[in-house]
Amino acid sequence: MLLRLLVIDDHAMVREGLQQLLRKLGPSVAQYEAQDAESALLLMETEREFDLVLLDIMLPGTNGLSLLGILRKRFPAVPVVVLSALDDLDTVNRAMRLGAAGYVAKSVSGDILLDALKRVLAGEVYLPPLLQDKLSVSLGSSIGRGRSLTDRYGLTEGQRRVTELLREGKSNREIGDLLGLTEGTVKVHVSKIFRKLGVVSRAEAIALFQRQRGRL
Image 1 (cartoon, rainbow, N blue to C red):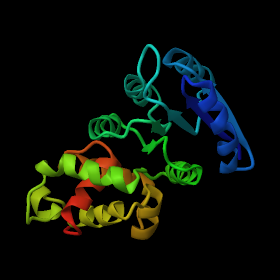
Image 2: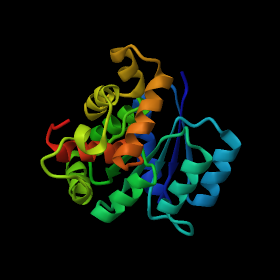
Image 3: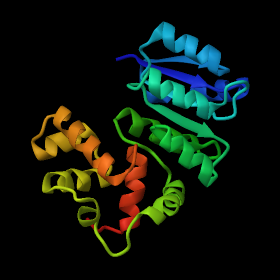
Image 4: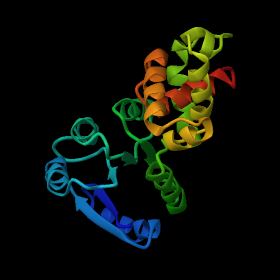
């Protein structure tokens, strides 16, 4: 099966360095490159069949975060992983709230990046442990102390079971298999859970789960 990847980065050396690494994702990998938002959107409109986008934040013209917001609206089915030299709390929060499927610092090893991309391609959301901790702290003020998610947000029993598996990092398909539900039904549950928790992505939900320290 052909895996189609788009790397959006204005540094040619970075794009060239990623070429060799990304080939390790599978036997058939088609790589596309863009150096700015305009060329990236043109490629997306033309090809329309990308499996994953790897996005740098520091782009000329329209910056990466603005482009991320555009991509999530125009191409909601294509996961976007942010690969950036920035790992400050505000930037990470903004990226995940805009719908990034993962956030990876450019300082990590190639093996860690490959693991992150594999997880995202499998339907998961990826954040390194350090960034998960930072995100938890950021969102922590909105979480009641001493109360479970079930009590605080009024989760039903079915939603609680789905939430437990979400916290374990299970994809919608895996949750469906484990609970005997269709993937579509799981998506409906997840959407309702997100609304009740006041989050917009799996990354934010995971941050809440971590902050709860196991209380559901």
